[in-house]
Length: 314
Image 1 (spheres, rainbow, N blue to C red):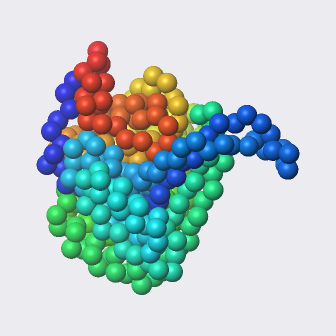
Image 2: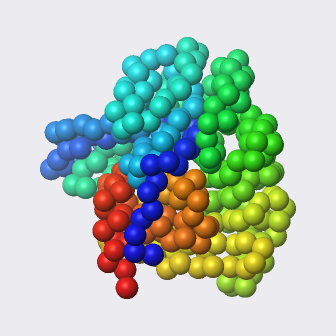
């Protein structure tokens, strides 16, 4: 595939756990006299949307129309997160929960290496989640593909009901899963675990044949049309009723894999919403993943970058 299709008509609804990714970059030149830890002299800071918000911005970077539905705290981080996603053309419906702080992941980077990560997070309240579910029903009608981005932060407490409603409306449903209980994802069209997430659910596999059998058994158990296993440097494997399809990794240089799963599911969703077949969507998503792992932190792949990479393929 040499040409990326027009994705401007693709309409996505992204629902899940959002967070604000903060980066403190600095120089490390000495060890603290107080404890055996490096002293980082912070020279610059960056803020980026993370979690489901990173999925949303990756999809808009490829040209898709995206609505993001989630929960944030009634705080400065929540305001900042809204500003960041709206600046990237995402339509943001972020419900405020005054009882929690917005999830923030603070990373301290020295000499291009992550030295420390500090997380601030609390589960959202039931009332705010119920309000979000009511809005979900109204937003569902205007999307082609639903993306459920589960980071295990409590924002998808009603995920089974969301899948039920989306199935009844005939929508394509993609899930980026978390944890060891996938029963709540039953009825999704496609589930996209990475290697470690897959191991948590099906156990360790002894061979490719063993993996295929376990993946297909899980897919059938979930009632899913497909399961896409992202395998880092080993590329990705797509399991469908018709069999298994594998794509080798496209990465030229791996710098940071954080957020790569967000890029994969965003590209898949945009392609499927534009009418692409699943193998074609997987190929584009794999190419996008190869680009994004060469960037630091939660990053996006621009449509022009992806088009250039596809055009260079033999």
